[in-house]
Image 1 (tube, helix red, strand yellow):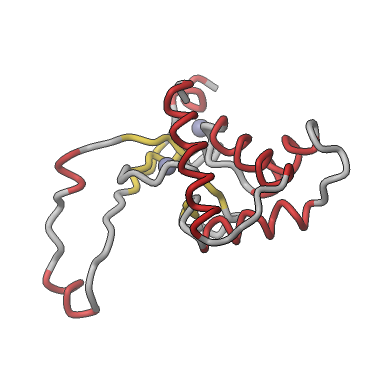
Image 2 (cartoon, helix red, strand yellow; image 1 turned 120 degrees about the vertical axis):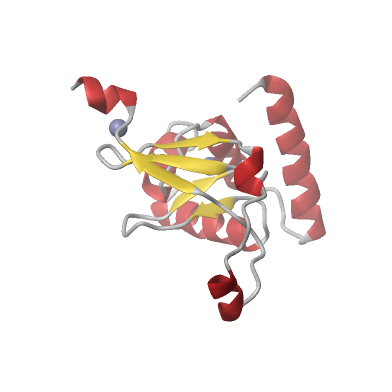
Amino acid sequence: MKLEKRQNLTQFFYDKCAEHGLKITPQRRVIYDELIKAKDHPTADALYKRTRKNLNNISFDTVYRTLLSFTEMGIVSLVEGYGEQKRFEPNLHQHHHFRCIKCHTIFDFENESYNDIPVPAKVQKHGTVTSKKVVLEGICSKCRIK
Ligand SMILES: [Zn+2]
Ligand SMILES: [Zn+2]
C-alpha cells in the first residue's frame, strides 16, 4: 500500500479509536500497522507471526481479540469465510475479490459495474441488501505455472 494511503489509514485508525474510546496501545498499533502493510487478507495466525517480530511477548489471543474488536468497530473488515480461518483486511472501500481455489490467495479489484449490480427480486424477498461484494474464483497465475 502506498505511503500516503497508509498515513490516511493511520489517521482513520486514530479517529475510530477515539470515537469508540479505545486506548491506543503499542499492541493495537502494531497489529493495525501489520494489517495495512499486508496485501494478502491475512488470518489472525499470520498476523500474530508478523506482530511477534516487533512485540515478542504478544499472545495469539491478544491478536485475535484485537482483530475482532477492530471488526466490531468498523476499523477493519472481515473477509467472509469459505470454511477456512477468518481473514481480515483494512480496505473498507467497496471492492471485489478474486480468490484462488488452490493457494487461497485473495486479490482485490475494483469494478464499477459490479458495484452497481442489480439485486435480483428473489433476494429482495429475503431482505435488504446493504453491501455488494462479488467473489470470482479460479486459479491464480502463480498456481497455473506449477
Ligand atoms: Zn494460487
Ligand atoms: Zn479485499
